Amino acid sequence: MKLYFQWQQLAQGTKSEYVQSEANALWEGTEFELAQRYANHAKTMMIFLFFISILPLGAVTGFLAILSLSITDRFILVHFSKQPPSLSADIAYFMYRFFDIILVVYAVK
Image (cartoon, rainbow, N blue to C red; front, top):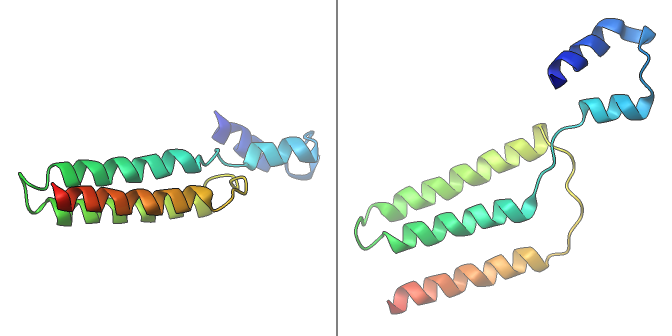
């Protein structure tokens, strides 16, 4: 539906009845939820570390999964989504420490 309205606005050209803020909202992408993306990365890492004892090749598969998640998230962020709200580095630091703890727990296991 949104594509139809975008096409309609393009077809009208300079005769469009949209106010600039409405036109901006029409062409703006979807919301990029950074916390959800971090949760997906953490979930993927925990799952492949859990199953690595059954399937040793799971480390390579998990690495490729996290790499593909990172690449697709970056592509979606740059090309299709709104600019995310600026956040402090606390989330990234927490995830960095969380991954360290996961690796230590796995090594002890």
